[in-house]
Length: 360
Image (tube, rainbow, N blue to C red; front, side, top):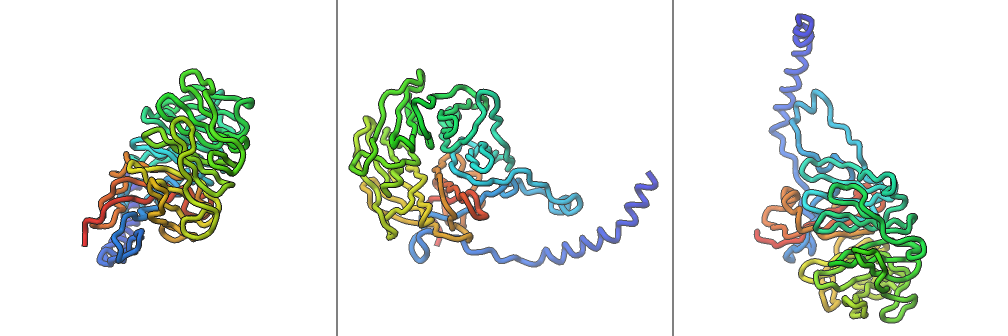
């Protein structure tokens, strides 16, 4: 006991010195970088870059600074490697990491990151696309298993759909009502399965470049009315199909100008029918309306705030706005979030907020 007191007394001058320096620094006000808006001022902003998530420390709950000084910063055990796709549920973000072939889970309430414990019959080999249903069931397209691997709300293995006879290279998955849509890149088609039985119902697309044909599709999404949107990557476009698989509309064209596509990848659609499409070559994401007219593009190459570096999967999230309000600029009211996976560069998951400007 006396030894502990003597040790504390010997360290007391150093602690007092630190407190003096800490108090002196408290008066300094660090200048915050201006928010990154799209479109840029003086136009009215509709989208703001909020933050980037690259490890579990980027969203950690803020602790006591003095405590961290004495004991050292908390060590980060999870770094995102090569994020390919992203999805979410209330309080959670799910990321497919192609560097370690695992699903990473971010708990937004705690700022902690963990791995989905796939093992045994649920062991993943080469996971690509991921979709999370409203029941928090996870559907993962595994390219090496040639299956859709399903995990329940408790993250335990439930079942697997398909086999090497049905799929050659399943790269993405989307679920609507009682149907599972699987994007098979190697066979240039979308296979539609019955969710209960797992039996194939029909497929959409044949190889080619005509309307309704596909060439190496990579990503899919489905809107609330059952319309299917497919990244027709090597035809440099996105195609829309109705619930029966009939071709409806084409978004984009081959080119490097505004509205064009060079290497289209991830896509998602908001509740108002606006389609978001990421391009890994231009490193921009473009927003189209229901008629296929370009409304806005954002991002751009680089490592700065809001820039993209080989973007892949994207995902719109209405459930977790509250966790990111602290990043929103004063006078900007968030409506929903957009996540963009960057497969390279220091910023792995870009988080943007779509909203309304209410300030001056």
